Length: 100
View 1 (cartoon, rainbow, N blue to C red):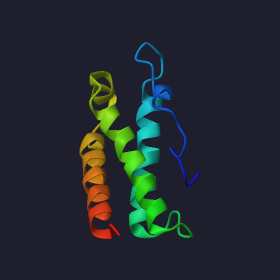
View 2: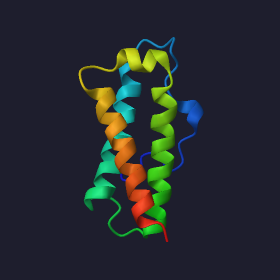
View 3: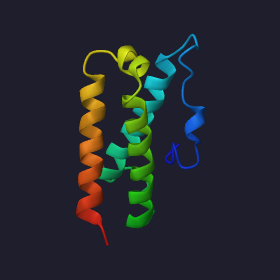
């Protein structure tokens, strides 16, 4: 499960008419976990820095898309949005710090 959004099309995100919008929040936190794991050195440990950066970029893209959706933000609880935003910032810093 290390490559959560390696090949996931954006159109597979939650349909706001669905009965389980929390599933999209859960999926977003799969991306949060992957990004944070790459940064911590516990995910994709055998991958090149280039592959790690590409994976982080894709997952940041997913999180950015989701955070722009009103229904998604309304489904988030407690500190979930700040946690997502912190992960996006950390991922961008990782990319900047590790550019070849």
